[in-house]
Image (cartoon, rainbow, N blue to C red; front, side, top):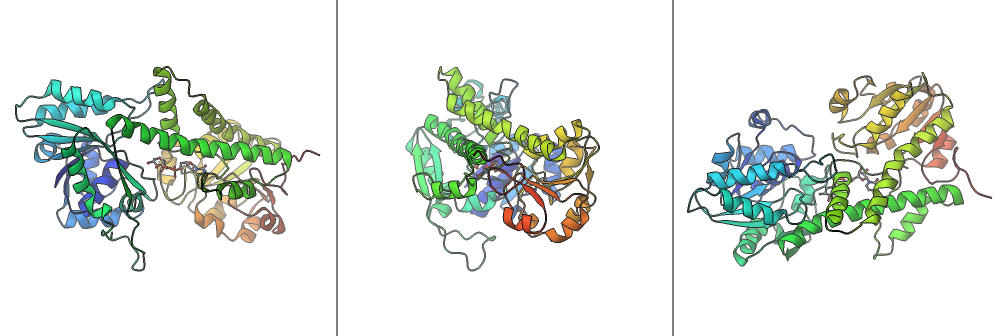
Length: 458
Ligand code: UDX
């Protein structure tokens, strides 16, 4: 099938590459000409595990190509995926101007029937607006449009695997033909026959995902509802951590047992520094706004957001309580990305923590396996090193802010030797309190007993 992907950000690049790997003929485009030039030169502007392997293979085999000419991409395709950004406006609502621009461009350039699919996260009713814009701006009598919604549930860091092995594929359609076309697009994945090249040879066959067909408005809502529910679970776990600190429980034990109930599920119940990134925070905010505009007060999500914003304050309180005076204290930071396996620092809690430490006069040294290039631009007054032991050298405190697996395996005995004061504040509950104490650390985390800084009510 001939597909065009408009927008070469995370969603567009992963979707475009994987759809090509699934056997389609894909042209990807973006209005950022320098991004396209980078991609045409064989470089990937983001860090996403396994994307390089898939992309290199499909470009080499001629199934994916990049063009800065959006009009050409539109004209050659039967199916167009809109994957442009929908960043938050000042008010927190989604900015849909990029979708609007693309809609007008598709309308103007199309000479034949097209199925136009919104893949960007958009508020309910965007499909209606998209349909109207396509009709109003159409120039050619041959240009007939059908609109569909196909939200993506890719997680940064595992996006390629998520694409090939989704739990569900959701499509919002208005007619049988669109449904059939989308079934065909996803057939290799739906049939579970598809073996992606990132698979290990002993990888078990993929389970067949559910193919969920809904109205366009439902599909749009499903995306917001999914992300907001994940955020809600995280904030719930974080309040449980606060309670454990006051009442003497261990949040890891509590959430593990709670999550064993299949009606609840154990994922996204990890307490710590809270959720960040460019999806969860903005999607929660946009969903609150959308509900407000529909006359519904989504207080549950407002509280989710409030709890999340407080996590950074709570961490800072722990740091201040332990260090007393912050000015000129040497603080080492392990992890800047909003989560492991990505170089993305957008709305990363670690960035906010570092800003606040610097504002208090602390001297901050930081490391991250992938995010240092981006961090250098956002936080130029931080001293960076790729070596965690150098970050620990002479530090009054070491803050673990992103749970990269390699930090678990550090030689913590050696880290202790390097530090001026053996104080570790683990904002991701990654390390074991008993082991850290046995190594001679003052160890602080969230909602776990046997640590400095925890008040247990008598
Ligand atoms: C999210 C959704 O998971 C994905 O389905 C959607 O397509 C895009 O948004 P992503 O932004 O990549 O994906 O991050 P995710 O893995 O969901 O993590 C979000 C944040 O929550 C991270 O900052 C992570 O550290 C935090 N988190 C996650 C917790 O604090 N506790 C948890 O238990 C899980």
